[in-house]
Length: 111
Image 1 (cartoon, rainbow, N blue to C red):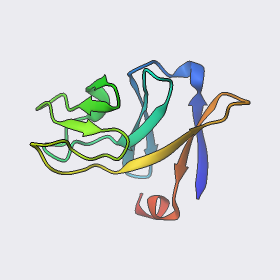
Image 2 (tube, rainbow, N blue to C red; image 1 turned 120 degrees about the vertical axis):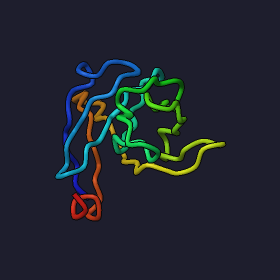
Image 3 (tube, rainbow, N blue to C red; image 1 turned 135 degrees about the horizontal axis):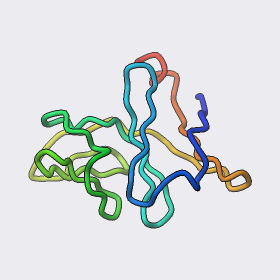
Image 4 (cartoon, rainbow, N blue to C red; image 1 turned 45 degrees about the horizontal axis):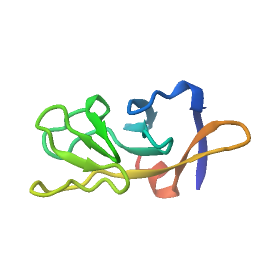
C-alpha cells in the first residue's frame, strides 16, 4: 500500500471533484456533503464521460453525458444500466487535515 497526500481538506469543495493522475489513470476525488471523501476512476464505463464533471447527490455521481448513476462507495453503476468503475480508498488525517489517497500495489503497477 502506498499513501499519497493529495491536498488539504480546505482545498476541496463540497460535491465537487479534484483530479489526480497516477500514471495513465485519472482519478476523481469527491468531497461529499457529509464531509466524507470518495475516489473513482474518472471515466464512465458507457461512453467515457468525465465523471468529475457530473452532478453529485448523496454518495452517487451522475455521468454528464448520459446521466448514468454511479455509486461513489464501490464504483457500481446503478440499474437499469450496468457496469462499474474502479474505486479507491481515501482517508483524512484528522490531525493535519490532509486528504490521503490509498493505492494498492496493483493500482500502482496498473498505472
